Length: 173
Image (tube, rainbow, N blue to C red; front, side):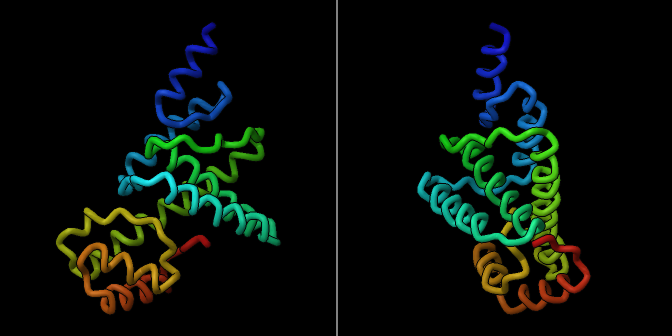
């Protein structure tokens, strides 16, 4: 009875983790996503399409490190879809030893990207630097340019600053 009530509480919180032991991790992920303050993606199809792409990349990953990186992308997309209010796949049940490295890597990777764009905007003397909430891969120039355009910044200047910042920033793939 108490376990059912706890599961309902987790589900109401937005992340459906499926196992009682995952409550603290789900709460942490929900708070983390709230702090990233990413723009809500209003279409379920956006989440499905990204998830399909990342699952394909995970299947193609050859090395242990690339599988870890792609698994973190999959977990991020599942948790973000659920945070945005869409029914999505549940986080697959893995033991703590299996899921912990994925979670830690995901938190480090996406927090680093989020912070990277804020620092790049500050270097560009962007007055609205604090309104930038992005987690796309900053090692891809076309994605950096799209971030600049979304925030009405000069793409050439923002790309140049980002390239310089990437030389000293510890980016995770």
